[in-house]
Length: 96
Image (cartoon, rainbow, N blue to C red; front, top):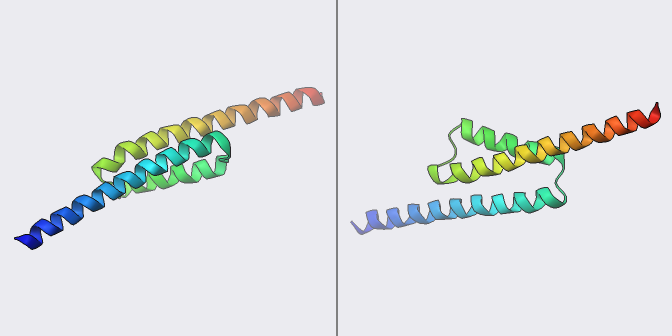
């Protein structure tokens, strides 16, 4: 009986650790996106989240945090692409 309770406590602690790690990764992504993250890095993180979701590697507690991170990464990538497209158009127009 005590072994079963100990096992449940260990699983609860592991679940908490995974949720905390996902939360920390999300906050790290937020600060990185605003400062130094490159498009390729954001895309690689996004692909990693998609892979984890498709292979059912995320538990129910991690899904929401990872989905939020994915949404932020998608916005970052779209914004980066739009900004680059505008810069290229400007350069092209100036060269004519």
